[in-house]
Image (spheres, rainbow, N blue to C red):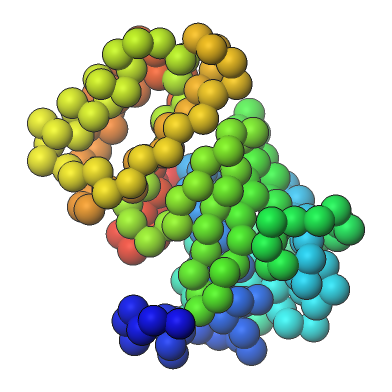
Length: 226
């Protein structure tokens, strides 16, 4: 494997025995919390592949719960995350599935809090790195390594042009973009990974666009919006 950076060899600062089964799971939990935009009251986590067999012994259940609480990979409270979640009023259920997954370390997270809800599927791909592959029923892929904007919108001409124009006007460069839709001129979603933080003012303007149904902004380095 070609050398990329020091992180790809030594992994992140973390609590736990495995960067794949703990650090990556923490990051997946943090992304899911960012999608919900608040601390969940109810969480259901489904483990696939190797995680289904090892999640308890490797602390993956503790790790993903810690992420849902907003903890980072090196937070010393990770081993007590289940107790902390219970004290905070969060109910967490763990399930396993024998359905084949795209990666051995795959998990699905379903969250709710009041009238809010979200669903996300992601993989822990090694070294604490993750890849999200599904958000609220859309096949969207992103890494969580960069500021990430997820927009659910109607599939209409000009929607993406309006969104990219707002980013351009704020001098925010798009590093990656992915789009999925349910049907032609139906419900669609787009994810943008950007090279810099997205200003709150821009997020507010994007929410006002006529064809935008929902919007989420996640920055694991600068903090997920809440």
